Length: 287
Ligand code: MN
Figure 1 (cartoon, rainbow, N blue to C red):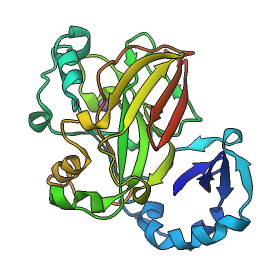
Figure 2 (figure 1 turned 135 degrees about the vertical axis):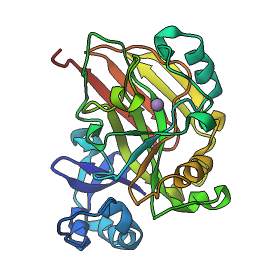
Figure 3 (figure 1 turned 135 degrees about the horizontal axis):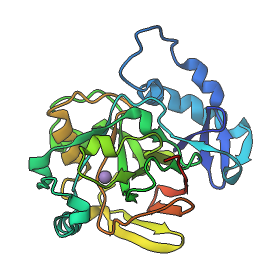
Figure 4 (figure 1 turned 30 degrees about the vertical axis):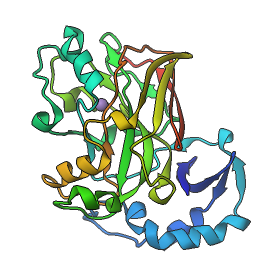
């Protein structure tokens, strides 16, 4: 099932070229009081809500996908975890270009570890990316994103896929420069997620998906997730050996080679096989 959030926080199921409005199922979520939980309540409840969503589909209101504003499919992740250099060719590209590494120490991912992006940087594709420092080099990084479905701590690689709720496409927007990654990658709108969440039952093997990023119609990145240094199971095992993972936590799996600068006005189209296409505008920001 392809689950989306759209317009004024409606919940939808994508069926071909249409969105089916299943927002009524959100009433099943427990109301919560301060302090709020560290997880996304919808993703946590999804296993028990899916039968009700399925039952609502035949009578649900249909709207063309093209006519709605797609929001981030996960509204309240507790963490946005990201892999730094997780494709060999991208590692080589970064090591060979001072404009990319800026004398930051670049290590193999198992030495570098993972990093966190601010959850306030999360946006869906309809919003567009608002450049934070347009005078500096800004790069889009196309990434497969795994959404955690249940609490995970010290998970074995062999069991890790059982903790995945589904997959999305992500853009890890990045200001190049000498500062810490989390600082350069966390301005508002710099973590794009969409277009919807494909539940894991539809995508049992996310380890062999073609992906591409076009900017203004020209291909910038073209790769396959089989070339990930650490695949989704290994990333979940690695991350959960440090953090407890909660439902709704996002793992941005890293970007392949072909990073390059973008500017205000550009149109980014990122596609991952069997998930869909992100279509994102870059809008100018105040300097
Ligand atoms: Mn990245």
